[in-house]
Image 1 (cartoon, helix red, strand yellow):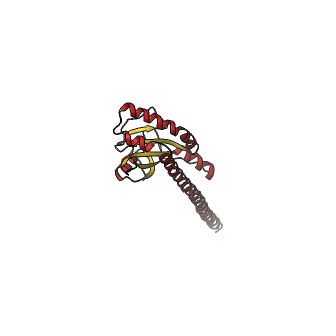
Image 2 (cartoon, rainbow, N blue to C red):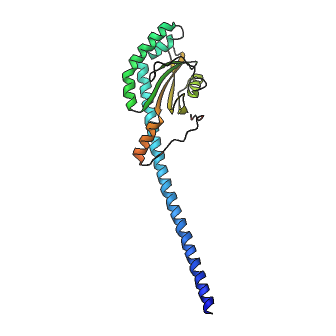
Image 3 (tube, rainbow, N blue to C red):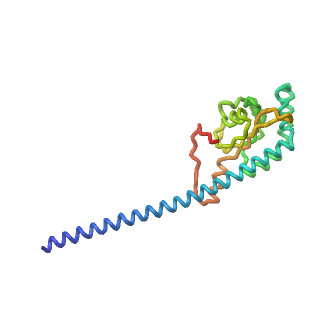
Length: 213
């Protein structure tokens, strides 16, 4: 009888400890899930705030460029101007934009570019020596903006970097569509901001073919 009682006590002890263990594990997992959910919600809120802020900055920059530079004039003339004249106009526009681009970079702007309606690069303010290449198969945002004649915003891959791109169709004084302008923000700047504000280390996992409208 004593042996039986001892065995029963041992089994009871094991059973109780097993139950306590599983209850503790379940509670621990629930607490971890709750903390993760709260952190993800906080990260999502900060991301949406940053996204809206950058969207507004891009719009303000685009309006300023169209009002205060010869971007519309030079891009409109590019279809009939000689190569020499286009080079002169491109240099003039780049000079007009350098100070504004310098300030915009402090706000996280990575790229500022103009393309014609066939998606041929007219001017990269961030890299003025490179122009004339066809971006149709590389930048879906230009293709969509020039086809629909509507602004488009999303996360997409370029030739050398991905970023959050704001692409605006451009029209001349007669409301004729002449091309598009891109104002892009570096994903690295997003990451730094989110890490600092949310106090959580985060990364973008990027599919090279991803494009979010």
